[in-house]
Amino acid sequence: QLQLVESGGGLVQPGGSLRLSCTASGITLETYIIGWFRQAPGKEREGVSCISSIYGTTNYADSVKGRFTISRDNTKNTVYLQMNNLTPEDTAVYYCAAGDYGVKGNGELEGYVEAWGQGTLVTVAS
Image (cartoon, rainbow, N blue to C red; front, side):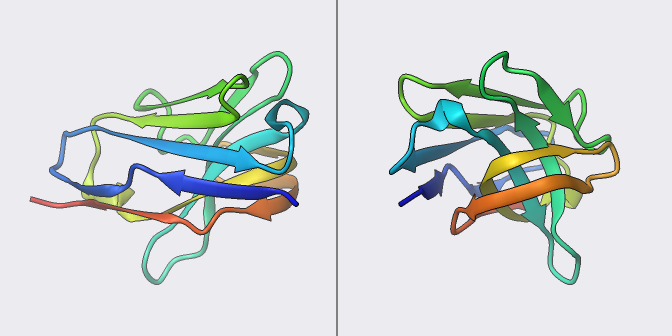
C-alpha cells in the first residue's frame, strides 16, 4: 500500500527558508510523478510543483517559480521541496502527492493523484 509521509514544516519568518521532505513506503518512488500541493485557510488546494520519475522533469506554479526547488532521491524514496524567500502568502498545509500528473503555471492539477500524504503545516509570520 502506497503511503506518503511529509515532514519539515514549521514556523519561519518572512524571507526565511524551509525544506520539506516526503518519504514514500509501499512503492518504488521512481515509478510515480511526485509533487507538492498546498491549501491555505479558506482557499482551495493548489499545485505547487512536481517532478517526473525518470528524467526529473519539473513543473512549478508561477507563484513559487524561482523561489522553490523540487528534487528527488530515489535511493531514499524521498522527494524534497526547498522553499526560499518565503512570504506570508506561502502559509498553508503542504501535501505530498503521488500519481501521473503535472502542475500548471496557475497551480491547476493536470492528470490524477493516486495517493496523498497527511500534510505538514508551514507558517510564515514575524
